[in-house]
Length: 353
Image 1 (cartoon, rainbow, N blue to C red):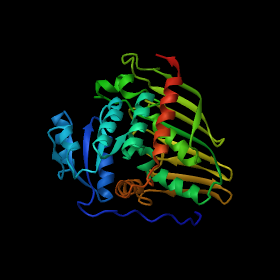
Image 2: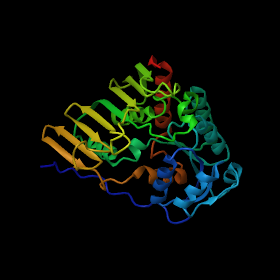
Image 3: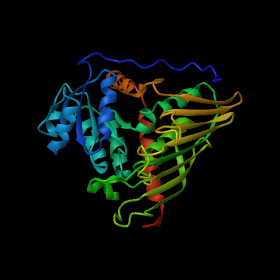
């Protein structure tokens, strides 16, 4: 029998139609669609979209017909109704765009990795301090995963005691049709900076840490010699400032026969039990995604998180922009996750390729 934990209520829209207007600029990664959907579900209204590629704009407008194609980035930044700009251009362009957005008096919501160098991070930190604007980051493997959100609520309720370690695994599939920038580490940031950033954010969140030290890190190109700029494997070990630890492994080895892009899992060890999150699939079962497994002093239990938590991050972000608060994800936390990702990437030992 599953323990009787009481979870947070499902989030509802936090604003009415037209009360919070945002735009999308930079459509190089499909995550921008999930970011847009999350904001709309929380009550926001998308008004404008801009990208230099008309085909990407046409696809966005087809998905979100309330959006109108803008003629330029400047048109979006000059629109007084737009409060927030959501963005997923080439990874190395996200930080500089964020500075321009904030200097135009708007808040910014970037896909991860939002920053690819320490210089970009310093510029973003300076701009947030100078302008008072928000530089939010879409760490979707936590904020847009009901399994990850349910795990956070279980931890808050003491289900596993004090969190000691977070070990997270982020396999992906290379697939076909990837753009050229995907294979250029100067543009995508490297595997630990890119997809690894999700995992560094989870380490900080679940342990409550505010900083960390990269103890070891490795990257490799084991199996893609035709794409020398691709890193198809990376891992890192982190000691956090509260004495807890984190481990991340990311790779591009999801087999072609697998039904989803990757078997993303997170294992959270506590003093009184542990959690395993099977976010995208519960391998070789019919359980579906969003599975949370709990073992503690009461026994062993399974929670199906689908439809249980919703995605409160988006409504909180909207309210933060309106109320000038810091509830969805603190600015320090968003930047620290990016910093650890960049530090791990810079320190990584190259094993192959």
